[in-house]
Image (cartoon, rainbow, N blue to C red):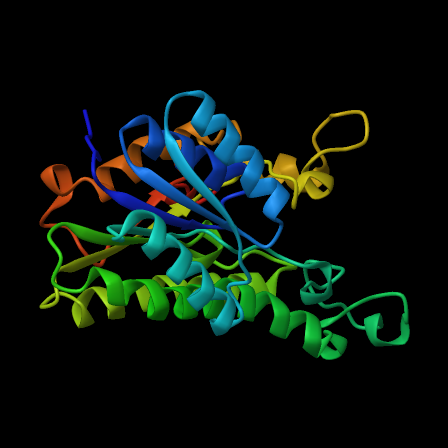
Length: 278
């Protein structure tokens, strides 16, 4: 069993469906956790739950796209815990303004003003999605990895996606940003190897979260057409649940289990990536 006693984990996006479970699990195994989220009430809720279960948690309001906000969080964490051992770059997500209406472009779409095609994708929307997913990871790593240099058993876990491997229709901004995360993870692993920091990523398959719920579920709770396509391509024929990611997370954070593993992107996808569709 993983033991993170005396370790400090910093988690961005900690108020979200997946990262809140990451935080609870690391705390359950002895880590002190710093919960960073743009919405402090979300991270406070997670922190309170951890404390009620006997763990140690610190909730911090933080915007991963602003260096000064990250530096302020870093100072607060350092004053409270005096070290950083694990960084989980979980802040991310998609936005409708970075998406096309249809899966493929059809002749005549340009004449339909109600449609968002490749040609009228909103620059600000695309930029926001790329910034949040990629730059939020880059900036957080710049700030917190300094605390981890030449420190025994330090590690970073980034969050990629199945859409990084094979881009999904309709979400070009998200797919591009997550592909960048996978590439950046490998770059970081090489760059920080001599400094003693392992860097890996998890690439989740399809999980129902607050951000994608309306895309995957109808109002009556049944699966949308897009969900049905996803499940057809997923050999295990179900969506993931947050607990499905926990084993991989603990494995990557535990130097006793994965001390010679760096630069990997591990799919947790129910077989999605392995299935050709036929």
